[in-house]
Length: 184
Image (cartoon, rainbow, N blue to C red; front, side, top):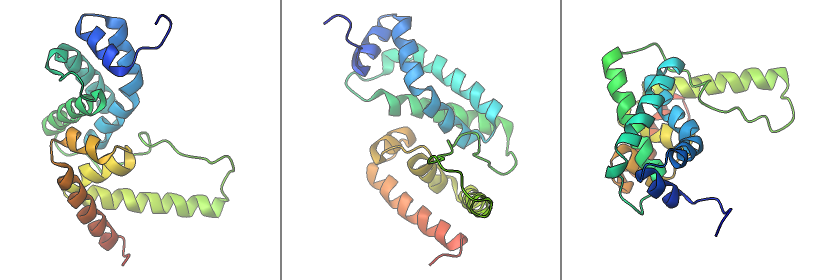
């Protein structure tokens, strides 16, 4: 059928056959979440942009390794995460994580009162600081699930762990964060 937009598997198949326009469409659909994954790992806007670009190029060169019929997004995000981890290892530890640039603020239409805005900003800062203090195995799962809004299955694929591991790390990570934040 002419004029119909291609679905993801068709775009991947075309990209595997050398169609750059199809790969560009895949990039447009996934570049924001790819950047967020990179940012969660490297904690620097500029580095995250570089990591994202490098990962997208690497994914393009490795399309022949993509398993037909699998979802593209988790496969791509795994490449982004691995590239980001490699970059972070090379750069060493950076200052405390700030996700301001990676998380879209949701305004809901109405502007909050100044008091509410201050409390919300303080709460967000406390949560992000607690998240940053978690061991990597919990931080990566919680960031994927709640900051990146990935499903359990996508998180498992991206991190290269079983779905049950995602569930248990989510539970344990949330428990540790509650403890850090002084909640019962």
